[in-house]
Image (spheres, each protein chain N blue to C red):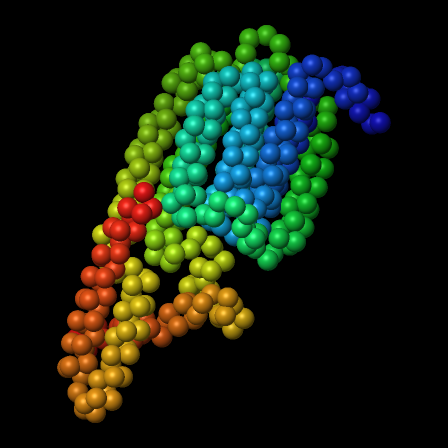
Length: 240
Length: 136
């Protein structure tokens, strides 16, 4: 093996390495199940396992603050948000046969090729690199807080502005679809109805004057919009 | 610990997320795969930060600070993404991104039957709506 030149061989792993390998296997398996399962809710639940495994990996790398932030934000909020999204979009609870699109074999080819290239490059570049995990932890809360508030204050503040913008943006996006009645679907439906009305009035009157046609289309559209408004809140409450 | 272990695990997770993004059809499953890719990047950042802070005595801890920023931006991204997916679902009644082909060119010929014809006649009805608006 060409790895014999490394100061620490791969054939005698330390305890931390064995733990990292086992947790990494669990994490990778959970990630594989997440992207291949046909039950959408199970995908979200396996994502919890993968993200929790990554938190354990951060702990093994002595980055404890990152680990707990990972548990709090990813496992605590992001997965819950994803589950809410799955329920609000009325995802099927059981197996859904169309979870994968038709290009899964092309996707598999691309992913395997990318994995081969990345692992080859990474192993070739860093096979002799050793992380010294002894001594004081590199990512304890004290160290992370000191570096964050000494060197990274300005990006930290900018990040709070970004979070505020994302909050406002999410609220605006979900309110607009509720109050704005000219959604594309309603538009197309009204348009087909109004065009149908135009042809009907053409057949009825036979006059090519544009006035009544336009007015008829407008009133029909208003009616359709009212119908859409009535359907909107009801669907909202049903989703809730 | 060898740096190869976290680096290889992160490469594997990234490619798993890549497969999910390319092969999945539901928009929320694609968001989950994007989360996997972001987490792979986070693992890489943390591993390299721990390595550099010990060997190069780098005290800036840029890797961990960037990991925190990535986590926060991923939370913002998932909020905005879910809002968009919910708006699309409310409008179209589906979260299937293979059927959102309104801006596609040249796909109507062999995808029209699968898409219920909603997007194939969208330009025609849009023109009709514009005509009704102009004549009103």
